[in-house]
Amino acid sequence: MYKKLIILSGLYLLNNLPISGQHRIDYRFGLIGGLNAALIQKSTGIQNIRWRYNMGLTLEQRFSPTVSLVYQLLYSRQGETVNLKYGGTGPTIGHQYITFDYMTLPIMVRFRPKGEQVFLELGGQVSTLVNNYIYITDPFNQGKPFDNVNQLDVGFTGGLGYRFGKHIVVDTRYYHGTKPILSDFTVVNPQSGVPTLYRQEKWFNRVYSLNLSYYF
Image (cartoon, rainbow, N blue to C red; front, side, top):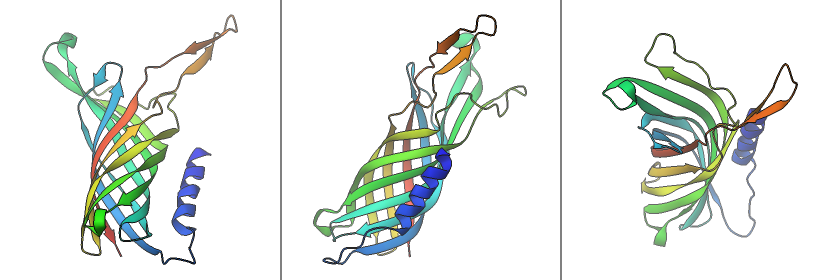
């Protein structure tokens, strides 16, 4: 349900944007791909980067040489890497790879001071979960999915970019998730019938990305 809603919303925004009769508004459609430096914020801190990627569609709605809106529909791979240490503090004996894949819809305002090639972008992002799993360097723990994961992720995104002529745009961006990745859950005791609420540790997505867009 949530996946269909977010995808349909993104397609609606990409194809049914308002048109002003007073000012000419330019629309530019393109493709985007980039490298994700993915992290997860936990109560114990942030672990190591998991290098992932994103790719998808981008549409720019330019109101003037200075201000434009950007709508993007991306498949974004995120997560983190954890070093497993002997005894918890000893030498590293393995790695734990956590993956959360999303369909994301960032909407940002781009501001180009005096119409220069450098721009500032800032906005929000909503995502729906596509896939998740944990992989440990152990033959008995490969590709195990997480239970009780929130289907939606919401947060803020922004960064800096540069235009190379009419077609190519490069930007570096940071995403700050505000909705916990894992959801609390209730289990009913089969003998007493009493439900018990279990609260999970709060995890939040943190992603730095370097992106390349090509506008037709």
